[in-house]
Image 1 (spheres, rainbow, N blue to C red):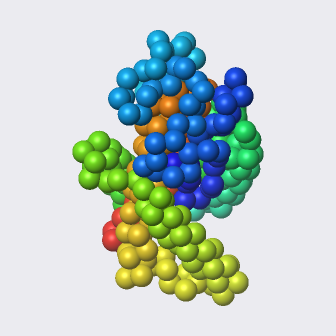
Image 2 (image 1 turned 180 degrees about the vertical axis):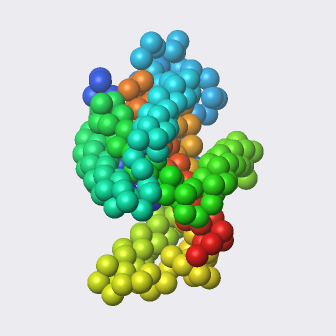
Length: 283
């Protein structure tokens, strides 16, 4: 299953160093028995769940994914804390801080797009994306804490962690089954959601106010919940990507791609959670 993020479409597992077709290029349908690393003697046999040969040193493991994800998320958190502490959001300086945050978000977007179109993951690009994304999140979170309520950011963080834990538990229990139909439904819903948000933003920029009202009031609450649900669905796709990558013997470097996708999805969920709580908390 080729996993994608609700904001950026990224490649799945790329080509093996030995030339075998990679996970994203071949394994498009969940639930099939096709092994994209069938010629790789170190891959796990999907029928028995046992390795076809002793594990090679450069095969991806869950530990690799966890460590790379911790590094990527740690970079986001570190730069977010630094920007929170160093970029003031008081009325006299908030416009300057917002400009820095918007610039950081644009740079993060560029890094993410460059990585998305590369055949193999580039750790420097992924960590650079995480650093600039953290600057953006730090300013937005600081402003929300200052003008909406001090507890909103903590609630958004806890909410994001709960969504992650809940989806992981449901996925491990097989309450969530990632199939081709599930993938198609999530992608269609995500594209429609993003399109509506872009239209709303354009109306807001040129017409003032909140555009079509998708981000405030009752509609804002509904779309905030939809955004969180979409993020949860993409977490399931990410978990499927990781699970199959390990089972099919993806090279270790692909753990960076998994970390990249998980980080993007968690950032999406956090922002939607923060927006929803801000609407519920105040004006």
